[in-house]
Image (tube, rainbow, N blue to C red):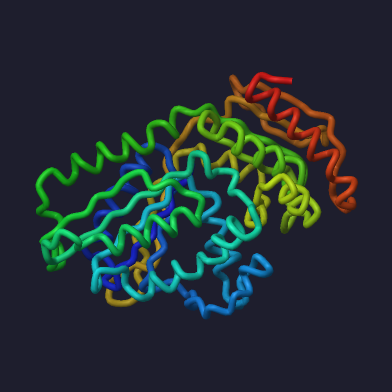
Length: 349
């Protein structure tokens, strides 16, 4: 389970950053992995309006945004934007990152590709403003709603505070701590209550990725779905990505990972301290707490070297390996996986 935060303020450790930190700390206590992207220090270029993403489905700018940030966006169960009000909008550096989400918008609305997590991915807005105007947060609300939609997340709530200007003002907001605890309970509890299923194959580049995508799309509101491999590859097989796109599911930004990594998320790991980046400020931070082990482990018939997990239901599917195969050969494997996932999670044949 993963919460991704975007801190928009150029003033790191300011009021909006404090709001985000409160939520993420509560999430970590509940067993969620968290990560924060700071607009002030994120090394991404702004959109240049070239239109390439609308034609090819990928950004033309040669930085690491697609390889680093898009996988985090896809993996997130919850996405949060936390921002001060700058001229009724979001500060420029974060707005530049938001504009780059046009690639995700294009994949969704030009190429009809769906994030498999879209049915349960949630989005939140935190904001602070110095004045008290009735329309103070209107611009930020609209921007956040639209970018969350492009990211495949449903806008489910906000916390916006007026009269907050000097550094530390938000800490004096009455009832703030209790409100954040209540909000995390409302947003995260349904995700915590899901059963956990792990799909595993050797490379985590084909069968287990397809199974995970179908499971998230069909029943992600009831199952926390993980995929991993005993010998993970460097990247997903292109034909697998293409085959899933034919089903309308976008797995282009998924990354193979090891069984050890997937299972290590379930071990208690202390929250990392802030990493200084000049003047005692912070660029990026992450943390993880403990969460339950999988209820089900589904292997793909390739004799993965899987650890023994007490109380975990073990299932093996005898499936052909799509590695190196043509798209014509991958399609029947994909369709068989879809049938098996539907039967397993939805109880249908």
